[in-house]
Image 1 (cartoon, rainbow, N blue to C red):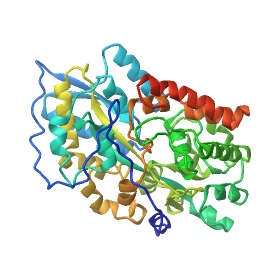
Image 2: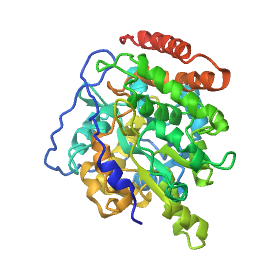
Image 3: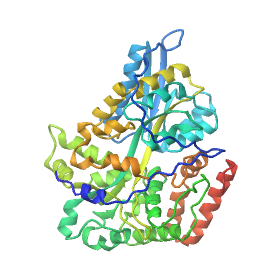
Image 4: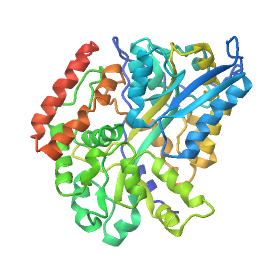
Length: 461
C-alpha cells in the first residue's frame, strides 16, 4: 500500500547517537569508517567437547513465531555441523531477568543468552561474559560494517563482548482509517495526541494511545522518547545520570493528562511487554509506539492462506510514522539486542563458535530474510536488500543510522541497565497516574534511587 509513513519520517531532523569514550563503566568511541569487506574465517570448527554437547540458547520472544524460529534454526544448523544439540528456549520477558539471575547465581547460566540494550554491559562489568573480539573484529568489517548503535552496544574499550543481532527502529503504528474517519491528520505534536483523542477514540472499546505503563522495557522506551521531545534525557554525555530538569517534569505531567483523560487505557499500568502489541492487534488502539513486531505480525497474519478480510484490512490500514514533536523537537528511537556467551556455561569456546556462525552474514541473513522483516539487520549493506525496499520500510536505514538509543545522551552502561530493570521509570509513572503523587515529588524520589545505583557503579550522579 502507499504508506504515509515515508513522507512523514523523511522530514524528521534526527540526531546521531551520542558515543563518548570514558573510564569506569563507559564504552570506547568507535570509528565511523566502513572498511573494505573481508572474507570470514571458517565458522564451523568443531566444538571442544569430549562427547556430544548440548548448548542452551535463551531468547526473549519477538512476538512473531516465524522470527523466533529463524533465530533458533541458525543455531540448530551450527549444532548439526558440530556434533552438538541446541536447547533453544523462548523465555517470557516478564520472568527472563529473574531466570538469568537464578541461573548465574547457581553457576549454571545459559550458554548463549539474549540481552537488551545496556544489559550486555551490566554482565560485562561483572566479568560474566566471554570476550568475542577474536572473531567480531573480523565480522564487523563485512557488509559495509555495523551500524554505530550496534557497535556501541557490544563494545567496551575497543573489545567486543557479544554479538549484536538487531537494530530495532521504534515507530508509531497508526490506524490510518480511524484518523481518516475522524477527519484528523497524524498528530504533529504530543499535545495533539491529546487534542485528537475526543474524535478518534471510543473508550472502553478503542483508546487513542496504547502507551505502556507496566513494569516492562516498553514503558521506558515509550516515556524516554517523549521526554526527549521536552528536552530531557536519561544520561549525560559522560555516562552519568541526568534525568532531572523541567522538561522531565513536563513529560510526566503529559502522561498524567493522557491517563486522566483516558487517552491511554487504564489497564496499561499492569501490562507486560506484549500489552501494547495486543491492544493494537485487537483493534483497541489508534496508535502505539513499538518496533515493527506489530507490523511484521500483521503482514504474517494477512499472508496466511486462510487469512480473514479483517486481518487484511488491518494491515492495509496501518501506517508507520515518526515521533510527534515537543517543545524541543521530534526524535526517533532505536534499540539494540545482542547475544552473549556466559563464561560459566558448559563450553564457552563452543558457544563463541556458535555465535561466530550465527553472525556470519551468509547465516545471519537467513534470520533477516525469513523473519518477515521482524528484525532489522546490524550490517549496513543488508538494508539495501530488496525486502527492505517496500514503502513501509523505505526510511529504516536512515532511522537506524540517526535514531537515538535509550542511553542518550551517553553510552550504555551497567548503571543504566540496573535503573531500567528496577522499573524506577514505570513505578514513578504509576504513582503519578494511579496514586495521585505530585509529578515533581515522583521525579525527585525516582532520581534519588537512580543516583544510588549510579554511585554504586562509580558513575557521576
